[in-house]
Image 1 (cartoon, rainbow, N blue to C red):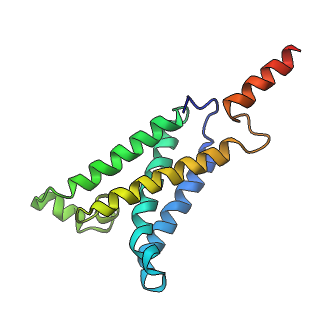
Image 2: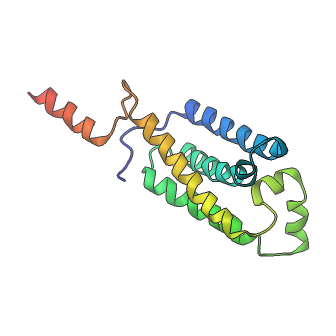
Image 3: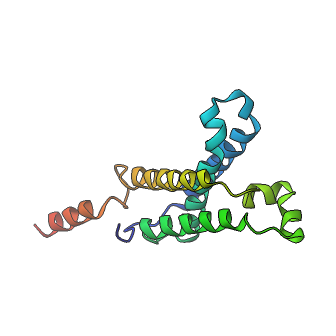
Amino acid sequence: MSAVPWRRPPILWIALLALTIALGIGSRRFAPHLPGLVATYAGDTLWATAAFLGLGLLLPRAATGRVASLAMLLSVLVEVSQLYRAPWIDSIRRTTPGALLLGHGFLWSDLACYAVGVCLGVGVEVVVGVLPGREGRSASHQGNRTQDRRS
């Protein structure tokens, strides 16, 4: 994936990030009312999607692949950090923001959820990047428009 020829629109990314966070928190809060698979894995999947969107917001012109790699790295580091047990970090994890950001216990299945979540974020970016009328259409569209202007 090459560099994004367009800048990620911050207002849209903030809205997508807020929606993702709301869905993630909702998946935990309403877990008893959701199908088992969704209740078990949606929160972690959406956490990684939020990481992708948040990094995309911070790095508006970075290549999609770079943002995806950073989001996956961040997700894996947070998951692996759950193997570390010390009173100071466990006290942070006992707070609501700490639990949401750092989690509680290492699970191998969370790594799969993070991969799916990052792919979901990439999918969102691809869909947004190819919407008609966007300046940020794919590079092939950019090349075609340049050739059309020269003709």
